[in-house]
Image 1 (tube, rainbow, N blue to C red):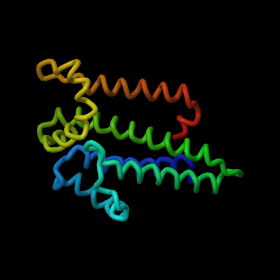
Image 2 (image 1 turned 180 degrees about the vertical axis):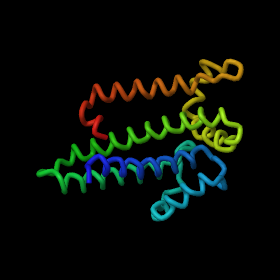
Image 3 (image 1 turned 135 degrees about the vertical axis):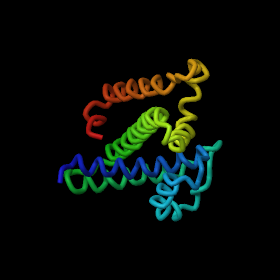
Image 4 (image 1 turned 90 degrees about the vertical axis):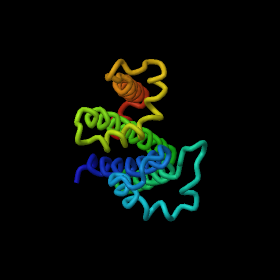
Length: 180
């Protein structure tokens, strides 16, 4: 198997736990089918945590801690299998970068899904759910640039900002950022 496949699989699992944390923090409808799917997939791991329902100012952080621990486990296994030496600092750095980049992917996907669902009348329930998930990120931009009639360009501005942050991280971390 390709190494990229393993990295992509690890990022998908990390995104799942970050999504769980974001869903808890946003307070979206617990009985929505998408929410139920995420909860059922993550509950076996989350129920092991004694602090899974703790929050800091309304932000539930347990999913992000699990995502970071999963990234650590992935990189420890990756280095043990493919590398000759074990560098703890590099493993921690890769784990942090993977967690941050996966969160960027998650936000980008949610913004894109919200924009696409807003155009289709049959997906109103999903559009509302994506709107609730992205509200904490989009709200500061909407305060500066309010919607113009029916057109809300705040999603586009946040997407451009995420792309700019991605490019900045690539210029700082180079190949390390690119392989994640």
